[in-house]
Image (cartoon, rainbow over all chains, first blue to last red):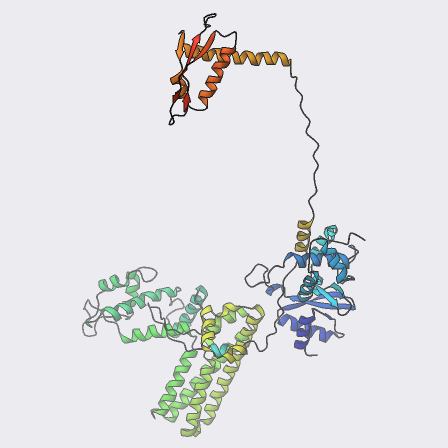
Amino acid sequence: MDDRVWLAALRATGTAELPHDIATAEARLAAASGAGRQLVPVDLPQGPGWAMTWRDDVAPELESAGSPGTPSANPVIVLAACLRACWTDSAAPLYPGGETTIEHVTQVVSALGVVQARRAVNRLLWWGYLTEDSGRGSVRLGPRVALWSEADIAYLRAEYDLLPRDRTE
Amino acid sequence: MFRQLTTSSAGGVWGEQDLSRDEDDLFSQVGGSEEDVEFCRRLTAFVAPVARDRGAVVEDPAVLAWAQAVYAAFGDRDDSGRGLTAAELEAMCGDAGPGTFESRFSVLRGMGFVHPPRDQPHQQRLVFPTVSVAALLVFERLKRGGGVQEILILLDETRQGVVDDQLQSGEISSKLITLRRAIAISANELIQLAGRPVEELIAQRANHRMSEQLLQEARTLIDLLSEQFPELAATGGQLIAQALRYSAAANVLVERLLEHIKTHRDFSMLTAEQYRSAALRSSADALAGVFTRTVFDPPSTTVTAQRVIATMRELRPREIVRRPPRTVAYSDPGDPVERARRRQQAVRIRRETMTRLYLRGREKVDLTDELLKAGWPRAARIVADLLAATADRDLPVRVVLGVSLRVDSAAAVSYMTPLRLVVSADGHQHG
């Protein structure tokens, strides 16, 4: 596959499996760098892979003009519920984690006053913080979560009890 | 895209802002101290062939302002053509540049930049020769271009000479060789520049903004020569080869600059006005062409781990802190009967003092006016106290109320019965 097409596909899906040969891997790393991106190694459910993010020297500032806005509370609460549901053992790596159902997440966040949880799930799917197994109604953590730093994950681990869970369990 | 943004460059005008100047392109130069250093370097190289020593050129190009001020003074004020005196020049130049007028003027006059009329060497008035105008024009051109413009001028002069039949084959051949050498040197400079850091490339880019024009002019000249001087075909071919080499090197430079801009999303390479000009003057297709190879990400947002935890912390219900009931500090209340007696005694003393103050040793006193002055509700309080004093058997006073009624709708006490305080006959006033 042409490197440019491969990059476009990666931008659409968020993650890609590692190529089998070194030459292809180097070419794709160079292609990503040329586009101002970097490929970060992640453990995908099916094996080792890459997620793509901005190169450090050209990454947009969060506070700068034109930068992506901050999300409302509902998607963040839903993401927190997904984190807890997919990351059942806080001692284990956060990503890729396990699966959870949208029904379960809806039940957890409704106790916190969140209505229209499905809408928030859709936003998180669009932004890449969740991925969905189409037809099964289940979701798992997305590539944007895979790009969180070790320090971020350590912070989440320390505050694990704050993540919402189903009280009936 | 950037080639489509290219517009013609206009010459600078000293001492005035040239508002008609079009926006330039990727090769346009932005002013600054680095450009001054570069200009100074060019000046030094320019003068080197005739300099006495390596320190012949000043290090601060701002001293050119003195010469430009002198030029402006002659151009604007010497309407009579009789010239200007040194005193007039000093008054007109003001503080045009660094240092003093005297020191700079002595250099300018000593080297003939201004001089007395040829036949009147002792004349106080000075004139400005046209060669000095040419010198300033050359310096200005040198400031904007690194020499490629001179090649363009020579190309144009040669072409014009051929069209006007003013040049012989030998002269044309000599000019072609000069041009070839000049273009080869410029191409070499560009090729060397291609391997330099981007910052240096950005600083040097203004020198080579005419590559396409240079190639076009060279082709036009050679096409012209091929008809009239076929014997010069070989020399002309060498010139075209060098012009192509120069153009290719310039294209490499453009590609590298564009790559830098794309990667760093550096929109500062062009000014905001240049983007505006492009938006206004370019066709829709040309503008759309900018994004033909651009892939857009879907709109997104950023959720950090910190944001997740902060949101959940806000949702957590606050813990209800149950405080123990306050302990009542029981103090010794003492004997309640004794306290009541003291309170009663204090009230009696107050009433007795009040009656003594009203009576002031007299047997009786009319308090009607006093009560009117006291207003409401103080009058009622006084009456109540006086009646209570009357009821107290230990106080030898009594109140005598009149039988008439004073009515004053405007007064604070509207209805008032005259009231007198009298020492009772069966007792005496204390004190």
